[in-house]
Length: 288
View 1 (tube, helix red, strand yellow):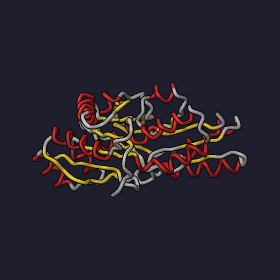
View 2 (view 1 turned 60 degrees about the vertical axis):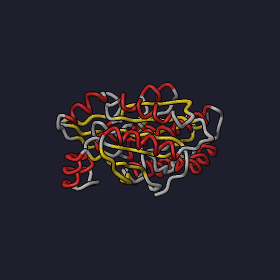
View 3 (view 1 turned 30 degrees about the vertical axis):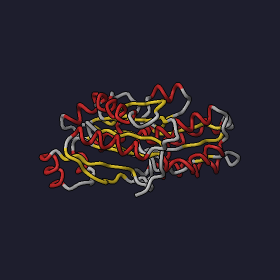
C-alpha cells in the first residue's frame, strides 16, 4: 500500500493483532508502584489488575511528539503516507502530540501526507474503528477512502461502560468521594458512555453487578443497526467470563458475526480499575 495505518495502545487490541495485520501501534507509558513501563503488553493484564486490586496506584503518561516521530518517519522515508487514529483528545493530550509531530514531519517531507482525524473513540471502541479501517485498507481502499470513512462513521461507534469499584472513578475526578463510598455500600454501579466529543459521561446507575451487565448489553443492542451484521468488541478489567456473558446477552437480539474480547490495556485500565467492562458496536450516531 502507498500508506501505513497507525494507532496507539489505547485501542486495546491484542498485540498479536497489530503484528499480524501490519498496524504499527505507538505505546503509552504507565507508572505503577516505582516502575514506569510501556503499555505494550509486557505487563500482563492479570498482573496489572491484580496490583491495582492490591492497592497500588497507576497513572499514565501521554505519548510525546518525539515518540510519534520515531514511529512515523521510517514510513515517510520509504515514500509512504500515514493515517493515524488514536485516543480521543478529550481524555489525553496525546492527539496534540501527534499533531505536533505531524507538523514537524511535513516540513521535512512536504510531498507526503499525514492524516490524523480526531475520532472521539476509546479502548476497543477505537479498536473497532481500527479493525474496520484495516479491512478497508486490505480491500484496496485509498488514503482518502479511510479519511472519508472515519468522518462518516467514527461517531457511529457506540461505547457502553460500567465499573466495579467506584473509587477509581473518584480518583479520576468523575465522582465525589462521598458518592463513591455510599455507592459502594449500596452496590450502585454507574452506567457510562462516550459522548460525541469523546468525554466519558455517566448517564445512569443500577443496583448490583448482574443488573449492570444486562443493562449495558441491552443498551448496546438498542443502539445497534438491525440491518448490520455486527462485529462487537468487549474490553474488560480481568473479568473475561462476564465479558462473554454480555456477548451472549447481545446475541439474543443482534446479528453478530465477529467478536473481539480483550483485556483493557494499562492506558484505560489505570483509570477504571479491575472489573471494568465495556462493549462497542457500530450503530446509531452518538448523542449526549
